[in-house]
Image (tube, rainbow, N blue to C red):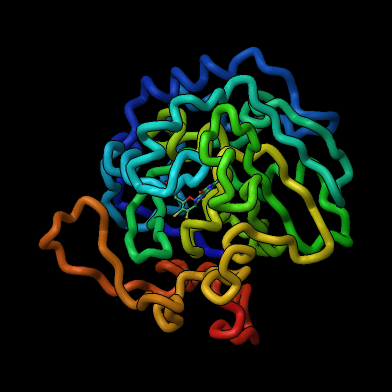
Amino acid sequence: MAKRFKSDLKHSDVTPQKHFLNRRNLIIGAGVLGAGAVAGTAFGTLGAKPAVAEGALDLTPNTLKEISSYNNYYEFGASKTDPAKYAHTLTTDPWSVKIDGLVEKPGTYDLADILKNADLEERIYRFRCVEAWSMVVPWLGFELASLLNRVGVQSKAKYVAFETLFRPDEMPAQKTSVLDWPYVEGLRLDEAMNPLTILASGLYGKELPKQNGAPLRLVVPWKYGFKSIKSIVRISLVEEMPPTTWNTVGPNEYGFYSNVNPEVDHRRWSQASERLIGGGIFAKRQPTLKFNGYEEQVADLYTGMDLAKNY
Ligand code: MTE
């Protein structure tokens, strides 16, 4: 099992407690996720005692403004400033997630039920995009593994496929063919079960801004940002490697694995360094870390694999 990071950052440095109280009020009174759902969650204590910042690197988070005004969310346009301008049109409540395929308890689960049973905690992760910029984000989320364990993964399952909402009336670029819609992503099952892989429903202790993928998005901190699919409506356990949006668009540039790797260049640019958003135009680029700095936690997932071939 992967080791966890400790952080110098205190939770109270980044998360005003009132936001947790808001979140708590929001989901209180929701039902229970399926029969056999795990009982007892961190939720009862969130208002009183903030969750720990386990799983975090010793990094200073970017500001909420930086995190929510420089985004990739092609359903709302291809420019980094489009999502903040246009994502407000998305209706995120009510929201449900269909979980199907090779699971014991398939179904369409209300998001409120999922969150009610989730062990939500804040995790501060380095987040790096393939275009060589990075941010540090205090996500509020829970381990994907805990949800998958609750619905029961069948032994034949080898991959997890994810799908974003398809609602062209609210996501204007879905009326164009800039990408194949809906946006889809995938992970190998062991990657999905790694404790660093989370589903985030918030950041900075508040609900996720819509431009960041509300109400539920994936965060896989050792992979390039495009693996972290937003506004998820479907999670399927499958036997074969599922298609992914960027691999379909440009198989030479975007592989299935997409692990952050300074030694493997993107076809059009180097991946060896990155620019921290918010550092100002004169800020020095910083060297990119293998697996985005999470090598100790995840390198053993890829033992024996040629990571230049499996990019
Ligand atoms: N998910 C969907 N549905 N649509 C997208 O266009 N863009 C991806 C990923 N998830 C994208 C998506 C890319 S390219 C990146 S870098 C990250 O979201 C950006 O996340 P952020 O805007 O929260 O920083």
